[in-house]
Image (cartoon, rainbow over all chains, first blue to last red):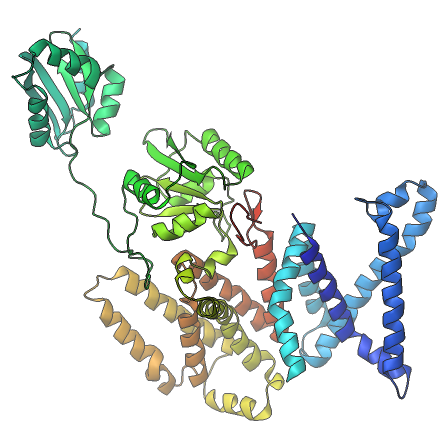
Length: 156
Length: 440
């Protein structure tokens, strides 16, 4: 089955999420005027790294980054991949925490943060337990539900 | 060798409708055995007499009659065939039993308009309880030698026939193999209701979404066949079970394609909207009134607060109460005879109309929300699909009562994830049946 559409949806959603969540704040604090410059530079850097990553992957057809790195020995691959693991763990904790705090500020002033933690963790665990296919398909469904809404909100 | 008849007599000793009719076939005394509730005896005798026309050579007829048109069977088979509505010719001289296909009593209704689904400007025939008629209806619409029909007899003590129908060149081979293996493994289990069939096909007990979509209309069935899906007929059920069941079935009907494309898209968009309104409206009401009134504009929030003035309990209770009444009205109007049905509608209309607002039990806005929800719920195709949404909306209402707008959001995500996690015979529930021979 062709999964490219699902991967695109997933990528677009995770980037949109990050963009609306933390990006504006960082950009606004970065400079007083000409905000387009850091945005442009960051996008160029992002596109360059994405190109680099995809170019590298294209040398190893039908393999992902972990199976490629397995070929160069355990220690080296551990050294290379451990930061990535650390990064994922830290971002997960950080994002859930930030999201819950933001929700308490905006929506749910009286709800304790642990309740929101529980909700987010339970839902994401449910989706994760069902496997990668479910994650991708869910992403398409959510994308088609919420993307028109986001567009509408930005237009009006 | 009298035991042949004795065994049968013993088996049917409690059946008043069992007959043993003396008859002569080619001047040979025989007994006709059968159930007069299933066999049209008078006309069958006529037919037998015609088969023995005295103008033809007697011996010839006799040979044809006993050797070709009748099949010799033993006692157990005889009992089985009598139960199926066949006629047994018992010859005393030869002490043998022969199976004869009699004229059956007309126990089926004729082909009528669909009663559970409505179709506008489309073919009006629908399936009936008799399986072979249903297969005939499909065959008449699919002129192809690729149509494959396989019948299985399942059940341990009460046998039932099960037929799978698919187009050889369109259907997914893996799926058919899986379905057939399920049928063969469970061949000894009884099927009385569709719930047994779900179990039969290996579904877990607590799954909201079944593997089958049901339809009464041959047009839909043929459309599904052409898209490579498999149809299942169970004897005695007046609908086709379409395998696998896809989410898109809720919104798309084959008959839509009889309209122009813009109109078709608009109708489908309406149905999608209907599903959304069903899922989110009650939850949004609870969320916005109870948890997050500050999300609304001030004027709107004030007017909502005004309409809720003097109402003693929280929005969640209010909402559950009204939804419950709506569900009760729906359930009652199914149960009641057609002549008393309008009474329920009228009384229900008064209750959820002005009276309950005047009594300050619920707010005006809630009546609008509940009415919109129950109308929107009926826009999706198929009663079984509407039921899925009807149940799932409570999940979001509960989420919303705890977490407000965030709850509505997570509820939608949760339901999307649930839909996405369902895989039916290797085909995801959320996939589209795009073109011919392509699902997924």
